[in-house]
Length: 272
Image 1 (cartoon, rainbow, N blue to C red):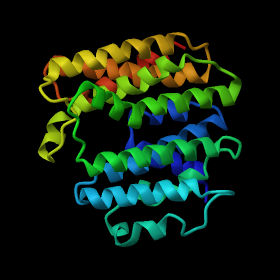
Image 2 (spheres, rainbow, N blue to C red):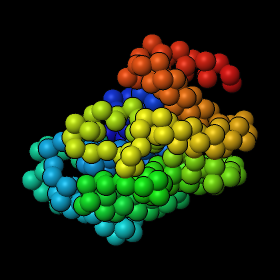
Image 3 (cartoon, rainbow, N blue to C red):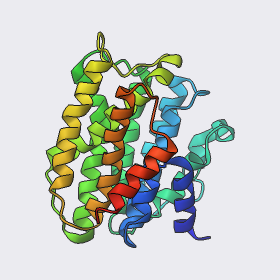
């Protein structure tokens, strides 16, 4: 089985935002970033699953976290499956194959990805237990750090591991937070239908948009400081799509169309 090829296929099915920039990364770094993305997508699918109650979500997320924390030299074939129990019948493929994504990364960086995913799963479990009650901007900051700002820090570690690229880590947090805030805006209506809102109490779309723009300013600075190379190539695409999504929402559209996405991506690729 070609795990790298399988990973790219699953990426293509699950994320139009990240498939293209990950596909363009050089060997080694590509496997590391794909591993990180798919591990985190695996737990994200649990957090958002419409058929699981919050207690079950928390139990599944903590089980994955504990399995990742117990790794020494990879994982037994049934390491994660045991924790899934009867829920394996309703969980998506990207979640059921989390063991494969965990071992996709090169050995010298894989434990950093396991650590980041384990910590994120624990934080997601805690949020599930309180039904994602975001009451203040401080709560929002905690949530966006836990599920996205920390991803910015992980990416910075991956760039440094690959070729020594150094970054501003405060701006790295803003990079992750900004992308997540745009996702919150884009998914606000759907989230409300399932009884969840990530808007602090009393906030409206204008305030959340301002929050997103503040963090995207940090994301812009983070990306602009990157030298020519794979990190810059990777970061430009999701950042451009985040800005484009904000513009689409401001124009009254629910999201970017596929045509919009392809046009924005082509514009970024042509900058190289």
